[in-house]
Image (tube, rainbow, N blue to C red; front, side, top):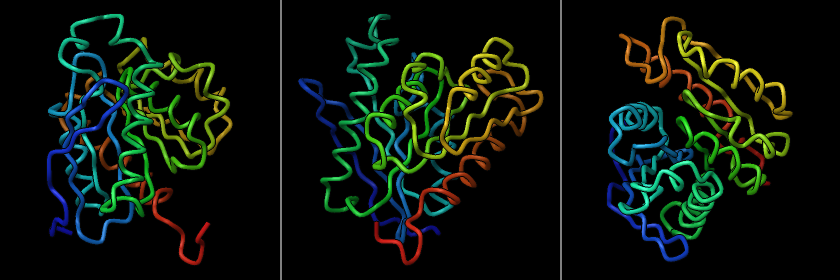
Length: 221
């Protein structure tokens, strides 16, 4: 699928914040994935850009956006303010649901590092509105109090050499009560910079969203 129906810069308003984003939707898209980046990153993250391109080839729209304004990104307290980041994701979700071009598309989240915690918290708060979540090298422990409330299918992907993060994901996995899977990519470190590692992340994410994001035929609920 190569034809693009939407490819434009957008702005998400969340409280007083104005957050720039890039919305790209292929023709015939069966869902859309909002990216939640980790600390020190943004909509231009090359890793998330790569995963987004793979998801678009799989037939999903993508929204990559900055969760923090430039001055906020310099504030370490805000970088790790999961409540704030989750609220920004909720605002992005409302943008997609009220935008005529995307309102009919099922929504999923792809979160990295601290962004994964924000994605899980927002998914818990929004209930059935979010259809699937994928976490890459995530810190789901930072959303511990919300994990049992997540209802949508959740995939946790961790690098096999990301030793501090593996136990945090295993603990979170035990708390999650939704359909779930934990995949450890052998030989990969936190940023999945090793040859083939990020490609494996993208493949796993695309498969997960293909399985859980599109509206089932004959089900209009």
